[in-house]
Image 1 (tube, rainbow, N blue to C red):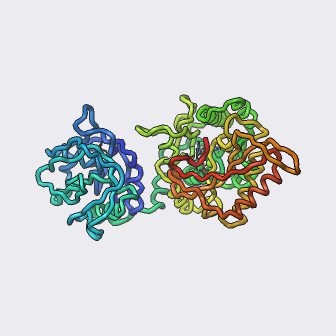
Image 2 (cartoon, protein in one colour):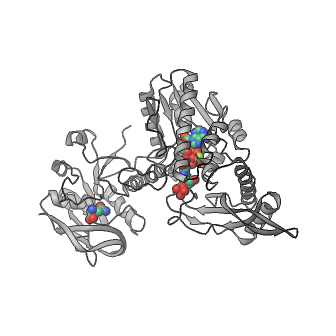
Image 3 (cartoon, rainbow, N blue to C red):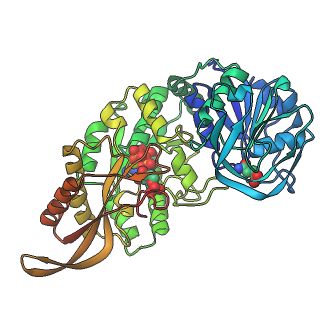
Length: 510
Ligand SMILES: Nc1ncnc2c1ncn2[C@@H]1O[C@H](COP(=O)(O)OP(=O)(O)OP(=O)(O)O)[C@@H](O)[C@H]1O
Ligand SMILES: O=c1[nH]c(=O)c2[nH+]cn([C@@H]3O[C@H](COP(=O)(O)O)[C@@H](O)[C@H]3O)c2[nH]1
Ligand SMILES: NC(=O)CC[C@H](N)C(=O)O
Ligand SMILES: [Mg+2]
């Protein structure tokens, strides 16, 4: 494991994991670490470059997060982004202050000569998100970019290899952002591009082995992409010490439990348990309509089932989950707001009876998890499965969950998925499913009045599931789906198609 290494010091910005992701995209290994890391620890890691992230604080505010001034003396190139650039300026004797024209969103930017901007158009669009800015450059620095309201949109001291940008190159709205980061890595830090997904796999396998030793591990396996990839990693790392556990909570799709059992009972060694926990989940959910409460109940029940089954195997120290980065950020990691409590993060109970939860994919985005799955040799049918949330149909039956509503939803959802498959759209559309609304309306069937449920269809295109577009499914396919559902599924007399993007909506309805 002798990959070149870039250290990202975290000051609490919203886009920090995106920085890490872009660096990985440039084939360079990196880690995000707290800004409190000491200089000695930093030195020991021999970084080829250091990136200081953005963050919500003001450098001159009380208790503002900082980093040791010595990192600018290590002879290692440093790139400060937004707060990171302001901090660099502040620590090196420049001046930072609030300005009237806070810049938020896209801005026209003019780039000057700099290794960071080599090979890119001098006029471009960047993404800004700040209320403070650098008012006076530290000694030895010069401005290398500007916008209408921000004269020091970039600064550098090329001799000392210190660079700062006020804008966010990691956000795709910054047209040449990836190029700029690449320039920092390759032209300034001397990166060779010696990192690949394969290295991520090897590194995590080694780390898992070291942590687990000869202990036993229980892997929560849903049959979905994330947990399959996590299980594959674990199986490589600890072989027969691994048991995979699949919980049928009664909120699975049509035939899903049997399909998962069939695929996985011999996939990662033969230690596979299927638990029928339908009654306990459904009875705890009875009459509960609030989405967050439902999610928390499901999150807790999952853990209690894992604990119980763990005890049956003997002493199990580690629980593995296929948690990925969007689950973490939406559940309100660090400074971020809670959007919804993913069952495996924000929905976890306070007390969990395992020594540790291992989440080897916690920092990865969905498309990176897929790449890793392919790297580990998982079949395409698994790697490209559409995601299915842990709380399952529990968050797709709006309001209180009943067996009747679940049954209706299962049938309708199966028809929708079947038609998408028949139309060959399953790769193009990244997630598609039916939602059982909590609403009934009047219809007419066979000359008779009906008063039945409204069912919604949801389909989106996305790469990272953090933002999404509603899918433009051809009308004739929608029509066929609608006809089939109303004809084949009792108690549904109206179908609607969800045409909202994320944001402002989310992909799931609850
Ligand atoms: N029915 C289940 N039985 C056991 N574990 C589960 C179940 N559902 C979810 N989990 C656990 O919760 C984690 C998060 O669920 P999530 O749906 O995000 O991931 P996934 O099912 O592995 O992948 P995908 O996003 O493709 O559905 C899973 O990785 C798995 O560890
Ligand atoms: O395992 C999960 N546990 C959850 O609690 C959960 N909630 C949403 N999702 C999935 O996450 C992606 C983004 O969904 P939202 O736009 O609805 O937040 C979509 O792919 C959702 O299906 C979940 N997955
Ligand atoms: N995005 C950022 O890093 C913001 C930095 C600082 N809080 C500002 O408002 O200017
Ligand atoms: Mg899932």
